[in-house]
Amino acid sequence: MRHCGWLLGLLSLFSLATHASDWQEIKNEAKGQTVWFNAWGGDTAINRYLDWVSGEMKTHYAINLKIVRLADAADAVKRIQTEAAAGRKTGGSVALLWVNGENFRTLKE
Image (tube, rainbow, N blue to C red; front, side, top):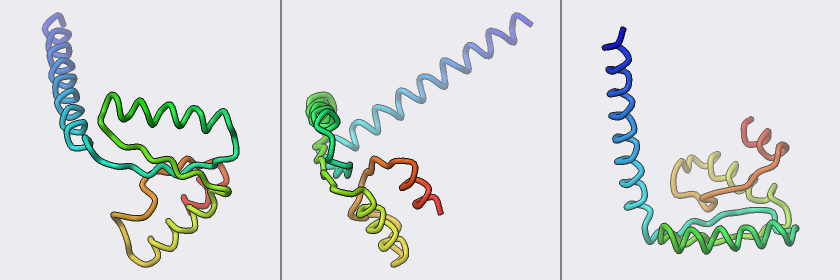
């Protein structure tokens, strides 16, 4: 039983090392990239938070997070649906989208 615990511990360390290695690879590939983050722009506090996050992404990961402030997030949902219907699986116009429950349900369908 003691050996089983040791083996599980060793396997978990291997898993952590692999995870850390994968994360480093992700960070290296993301460096210098631009991500267009579509979000509803109607709340001042959320806008300030997203501006802060954008700065943190630039400082810590060298990622240019561009905030696209939307009057209605449903517009981005429609773009995603239109691109998907046209067969576009990668490289769409919406890289990242902050969705509410209603828009999540629409995208899920």
